[in-house]
Image 1 (cartoon, helix red, strand yellow):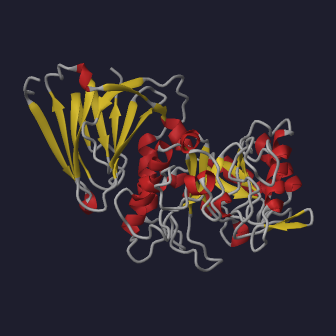
Image 2 (cartoon, one colour; image 1 turned 45 degrees about the vertical axis):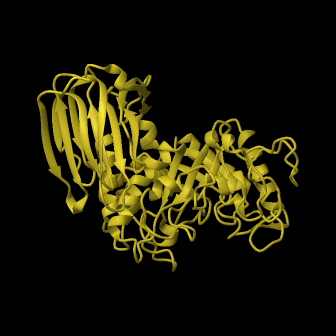
Image 3 (cartoon, one colour; image 1 turned 90 degrees about the vertical axis):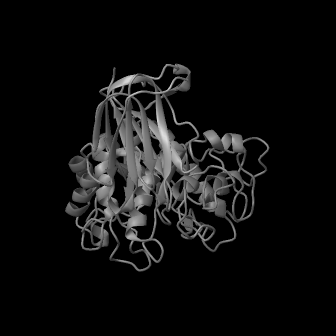
Length: 460
């Protein structure tokens, strides 16, 4: 290759020791297009739609006006909710959720939640949400290992020796949704924590396959999506480290947290077999709880950086939707504090500021008719550097490149297969305005540390 001529460099120092970004707009263009390979983008809106949160409502002491304000600011697209705490007289009613949708545009995953078993109520209330355009999906029981159920007089999960009641409830919920003309099109998400089953009722499958040797019959249908609670800090991985969120989203047995493999591959409690690794790689999946508790080594800064990278890692590794616990620290229970994007007094933590910036930089409410390809490579890409190629509905590419280093830096070059007339660089830890604007770019030198950069590339 011939030497490159006339390189122009600009340097930006990021806040909080986050690293140095060096941008090179190179002239002339690289002579060898074989350096780059075409990658198909994903619609920016699909990524934004994946960003969800769990929150409390008036029945737990949080006036609705506050979630509306916080959800708007951060840019959440969906909220985890359900029939727990819901009543006709309030303070939390179905109108609470209709108002939340009307004021923010969020859709709702609608679940039986902790210990719930009222399928009739779930369906009736979901119909109201669906008619208003507020329904996203259905969710099975929340962690039945921690909150058992009583269904048709039979107890299961919790401290009970059998999970048959949990399985029958999930089966019947699925059938109720799919037999309803209005609701049948909505996906059903599985229970969370099927890996805790004490007897093999087959909840590690979406549909029990032939030869599974489970207590429930072959062909029993439970869900359309696997649902996990892959909190990034776990007894097997309790400390901050490189690639913390990337590893938590790992669908293989290498994941040390309570992830996809331990719930739908080989169950973590009794080692019941589920899907093969090849099947897990493409298994439809969501996360309805993940997050980080600010405590000890996990500072507010690490918490913010974790939550920012978390949504990117989850989406890149196949999770269609991800909900973080929690929007605001709870005041009505002990032991679940300092998880929130917001403190108890409703002031935003750094995590809220960073997410506000990221969703603001990517903001898109249009529809992308068909995703295009962008020719780019990151040669010798380090293990702690990751990328996600998005495309805005107006056509521009938004290449998100992020580092997950606890300390130190990675220096990489992004090489494009063609010269691009204009490139803007954004840093969500700084703000929503570009930190650099460059012309006639075919290569970028980046120094990455612990957060994402967004590279907006205008169409030719």
